[in-house]
Amino acid sequence: MPSTSISRAEYDAATAVFSVWFLASGRRYDYDGVPQEIYEAYKQAFAKGRFFNENIRNKFRYRLVVEAGEAR
Image (cartoon, rainbow, N blue to C red):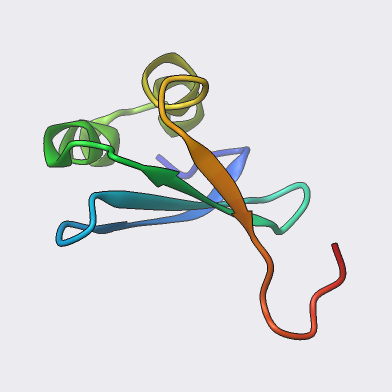
């Protein structure tokens, strides 16, 4: 099911970084140290936003990724 809050998500297994783009702001945040099992469960979750809020947000260190030419 498409999320009403998350437009896109990617995972880099080599660095354990979960990247998420939010619909409302269009901003990307990278979450460090996310185990691959969490990402796999996220992909299977029916409600992606709820899964993200319950299992990733405020549980892993994160940072805003500012793309070249993007204002903060």
